[in-house]
Image (tube, rainbow, N blue to C red; front, side):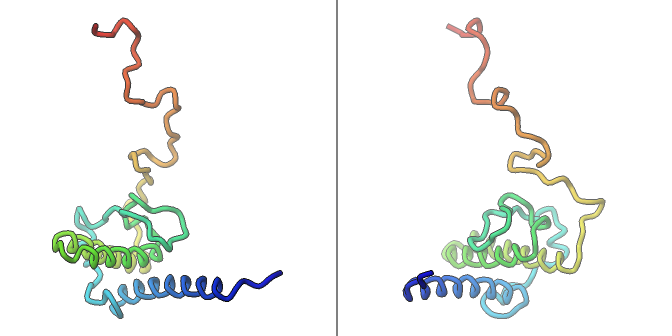
Length: 164
């Protein structure tokens, strides 16, 4: 087996070091150390509020598990939420010129930290888990409608219903 060229090895190692740095920064932020430490995890009162269990807007680039986009934070793995904190802090920095957007991103990061902390402590939903739903609001176990019954945007009536 031929060894990889040195440039390729260096590029792969640089990518891995950058990925590990982002993970460590997110974990450090969750525990109040390093960049993002100025953001404290959200309080239990905030997490229990009607808006405290936010929907996930996107999957972090480094997440290798199943997609959590459009899922709620309470249904995610703590490791996913650690990475999501880093994504939200990145968006907060990117939107620094718009205080409103930056505030929403920082609040999402704080809530993700709070949910990660809560889930690591063994939190479970009251009354059992609600069924997981897809982006259309259907329970995941329910099959999608068959193609011939799916709405395609056109009326499927006969020629007798044409108004002209």
